Image: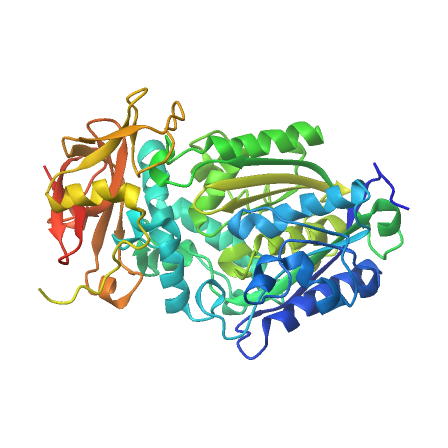
Length: 395
Length: 136
């Protein structure tokens, strides 16, 4: 019997290897992530009855109907629920909200959210940087890409405007990459942790990609997978980990055409998402112990901090310069390294969420933030085009 | 004319062609809402101010100031890379809306937000004329 109005919780998480997975096929990596998250949650894969977001990749109708693709073709039985958000790289992490909805409303009992990039894929999921950069350049549409814009330049113009309005400096942005690399060094799965710690000078002396963003202001381009299992709080209590609940959630959808956004240094839609999430969770900014903020480029973190109200608008640069984002700082952020140094593969906001779950469980090892009880997560689709915010805590 | 290997507009719907045809004639025509007078760029089916469909294609002055910019040093393809460094400018036009384009004939080190620019036309193929900017 379906149970309505029950509480939901994240019961399991799993990360696969991250890096160059060209010798594997995407469905295998996707399944490894899902099976791993089920094992972590203490549920059988046969118990999966809901999917939010992507299924193992496929062509034609399989690509468009992920819920159907996970039914008899993959699990050997029908699926009870499928839904998805449309938020680009933020989709998978935002999808955890829909998974919680499905469980709390009785539409499904064990819902998986997963992302994976692997194999000889072309375009976004490619391990080939030239191919990925070319494909992503065209995301912006013909009124921009014909001029030779790239994903980096799409954010560089925002960074340039922020610097102009508020005096944000390249060295302040560099500190974000430095702080996050320190976390990546302590995470065995991170793609760049093995390269060791960074200094501000390392970032500033890396080659310029699109002014003011240097190579080390930009995220990695790699492959990998991860998954989260959401189930009822009662069932999550049977696992070997403290259940993690979403206490608040909000979205803010802004614009498609960059010319439509009235301002390119502050983003009301991102603030809307954060305000909604904080209002729902009934917690204060100062209650947050650890954060995960989308970081395709260092400047994103400044936008994320300011939009969430962790500092005043325009003061993101000085906030990060104070060391706030470091593991021992006032708001440790992207403690596994984020997209910059941990992994940027598939709908990688999910990896940022998984790190927060590990922090809240107290399982983050050398990266563990002391007394981490409340976590803030935000994600961005496109260039500040879609935004979501969420707040998590132990049940 | 040598082969143009950089990106050209793809999948432009017929209703947006008046903009591209205006560039061919070395002018800029932009949609203006017949109901409320709001400019629409890039072309849009619905007015963002009043959601009306109707719009006239009206000529604009082709002048503006730099709102923000970047200098691209890593292009999306080898054809673009051959042109690096090049400047992408977001320009606030004198009519109030913003447009994106390359800023030509300028040393990247000399570009600054607020600087005055004007439209320029690049006849890149027999079929396509692209918009660009140059210092005013």
